[in-house]
Picture (spheres, rainbow, N blue to C red):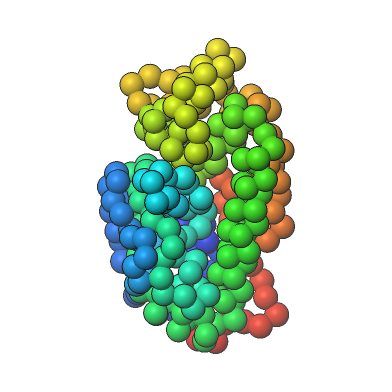
Length: 249
């Protein structure tokens, strides 16, 4: 069966994926497209096949801080999986790409009818919660250079490209720090030969070196992904998970 390009969907048994295919609609993800406005009902969920979506918390004074990322490893719209119909945060496209969109109501209905789909989606919710917890600890405990290295690796894993169209201003907003701090941290990584930065684009040139420069949080999240989904590398092909209770089709 032809894979969808979204690793979460491609974990599903072929019969389950075939049930979902008629409800999946290709969606372009142009830069800065808002997919989930803050405080609005979550009517659709998105399974990215390329590019990257940032989930951003907006403060009263206008400040914005990234609190999550969705790429081809997962989905946007975990609220809908838990029965909620409102988004506390705003979701926007930060690296252009494409996705498969689906009605949140249809996905909830399919989860009620399929044990496997429900288990896969709830495992992703658990991963998202554990990642957010680790990120909160990382932001408090680790140096900005380490946090920047971790963020770049995370963005690279989800976008599927070493070339990331990112400005220092945007990264500063995503990390919740001043632009000057990001500039110093990026210069340090560039001087070490790990990245190249020019004209609003960062290129990862030494992935292994960047992994050595980051904190342990990057590996903690990767191990959690492997524990929940049985894949050792988020960028590697996934396998279909086996369950005692097969989906009802």
